[in-house]
Structure formats: structure tokens, C-alpha cells
Image (cartoon, rainbow, N blue to C red):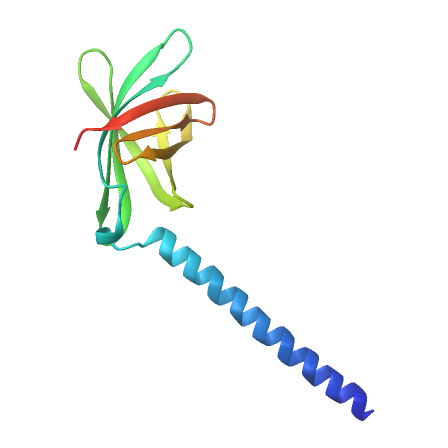
Length: 140
């Protein structure tokens, strides 16, 4: 009986210490990816990009601004319709493993996600709605 109690105690201690480490690592990863300090940010800036859609739309010019607001990563997006810039509603902007994922409302398709990858300090590329490629460059 003593062996069972000792074995159970050792197992409980091992399980609880591993669980707390796993939770701590998850929390640290979440905080560092969503609330990084602006001074440590290489992503902030204004970008011009062109999304390659199929017919009847073709290539559409888009302006993307990435910035921090109250220590939270944010973005604004607008596209040029040939006459004027049209703002797009952005639901969320998240940094995950070096890429930025922007959930936005497309007037034609509804909620879509835009994946932004940083090729170098002045150029970006990615996917719009998971299938339409784009390339862009930092203008500021």
C-alpha cells in the first residue's frame, strides 16, 4: 500500500509540474505574439500592394497600414476602385510566427483572411482569402 501511495504522489507531482510549465509556455507565446512592444516591431509601416484576382476584377491596388494602438497590433486597409480609395472593415490583426493575419470584411465575399509575409524589411507578399497572391512594398 505504501508503494502505491508513494507512486501516486510522485506521479501527481510530475504531472502538475509539467502542466504548469506547458501553460506558462502557452501564455508566454500568446502574449509575445499579440502584444509585443512597438519598439521591438519591424512590421509597422505603410505598404502598397497589388492583389491578383481573376476576371472580371484583374489586379487591384491596395493600401495597407500596420501600426500599434494601445500596445495592440492593428491595421487599416483600403483599395482603389479606379476613382477613389475605398476603406475596408478590419475585424482583427494578429501576429503569429512572423506573419500577420488580418481578418476583414470583403464587400463581395464577406469575412476573409489576409496572410501577410515579410520577405525583407521593405517588401511583403502573401495571400488574400487563401488563394489570391499579392506582392507589395513598404512606402513609409
